[in-house]
Image 1 (cartoon, rainbow, N blue to C red):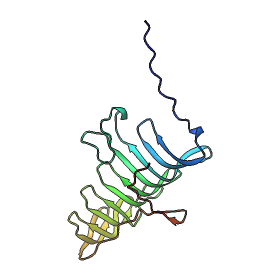
Image 2: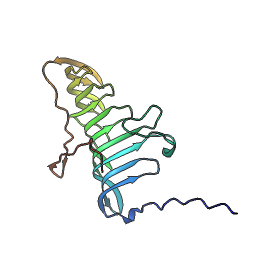
Image 3: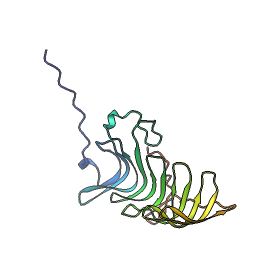
Image 4: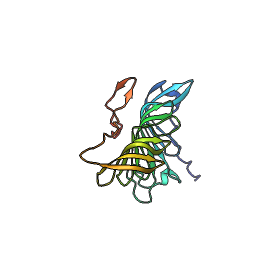
Length: 195
């Protein structure tokens, strides 16, 4: 008896079958997932609007990657970088970025990928900087909150403290992921799971 032919994979969804704009879940061959709003411009699909990109940073085949959980991966499992917020023609402009080591940035980002003053960077140990940035370094005035919750006000230069003074009975306001879209503030929870 001749061998059976291999089972064919279902045909991939064709992008041409999608409306010009809407909300959809896109799964790339490398395991990267985008779920959210998109639009087409000049026939090209773009992440555009509210959405979450889970960028698979696994160096091997994602199907061979056990226990892929982008937020809490088990030791030795694949890692991911998550961009959760608002997009403008494939450029992430504001929201939350979660890095593979557990650190995160909350705030606006320039088209070149630089943090914007007034954003917050939370280190994987739990301490955080809320204030000015130059490039992606703490640079300028702001607040540093250590792992014990002690608040320090002062200046940073190139990720190094120039001067910090302990502040009593004060808690700096973290950037709010309630982001503006089309001039209207929306209650957008960057922790929400997309349905």
